[in-house]
Length: 335
Ligand SMILES: NC(=O)c1ccc[n+]([C@@H]2O[C@H](COP(=O)([O-])OP(=O)(O)OC[C@H]3O[C@@H](n4cnc5c(N)ncnc54)[C@H](O)[C@@H]3O)[C@@H](O)[C@H]2O)c1
Image (cartoon, rainbow, N blue to C red; front, side, top):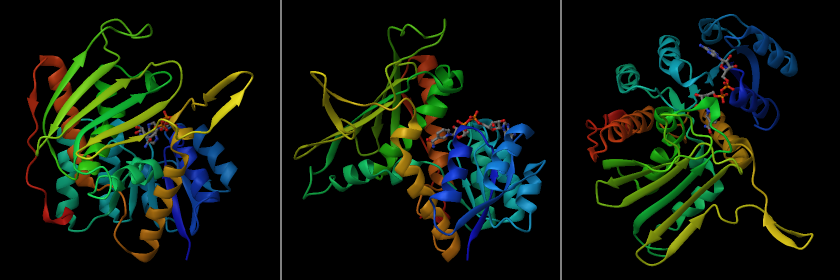
């Protein structure tokens, strides 16, 4: 049976997800689209042969919608998830779960109160073949115990005009999640350093940033985030292990020799770098919806943890101090 998906948010990523669902994911179709900008919803609906509706509630309530994809801006994910919980259909929600800690906690509490997991969160890097291979290296047969995780996350230009705090809650949140996933443990503390600003950094803002976390067992996780790097979109993760090193990112693209130079092409946007991860994420979610099996991706707990870390990062940046990260006990629903 085909899973009929309703899409909320027809911008950059919502459109990419909708096209993937309609054309590249088996067992899925898109029947309904909502966007706060009705013109966008109409345009995407016309392209897919779907119908545009006028509200979030209409998407969740539609008889011909089995599951819902939320790809609206960061600040409305929490309230839209709450509407969805009232209806009970499976949801794939883009990251972050919420911008603020209180909203993230409210969504977590609401799903726990429901007593079943309705949501997979869009931390798609967990499906990226590069990260999957990197994680497989963290074994006695591979590079051994991870000791330090070095990350680089650079955007060509700041998406949505990100400024310092949004860099942490929107962009670096990918690293907060993926390093937690790689290490399979929570963080204990965080520091944020802001150095010389880049040429496009708005006055009073900080870009690039260097974030240093320490995990509960002591592993160091270091992240360079540069939202206005100008030269391209690049993500690198390099793990120093007890028996060696594994590097993901350098060389994950084709090296071309031409006109007396040898080089590696870089995408302008994340859609190029993580295309396969987005597709695999959607396929995994649709397969889980169809089989009523467990979701293969990040949970609301993972989203909550990442939002807490991002908010501690903001505090660390504001105060210049190393800030402790203390999560409440993980609810049984997520064990
Ligand atoms: N996982 C990833 O790698 C990844 C990549 C890009 C974006 N994202 C996330 O996806 C979300 C959307 O990002 P984007 O790049 O597509 O942004 P975008 O600005 O291109 O699109 C957002 C769309 O949402 C619409 N919108 C605004 N308010 C709305 C509301 N209340 N309800 C429904 N629609 C509303 C806007 O009109 C716009 O069409 C963000 O939360 C972002 O963090 C994730």
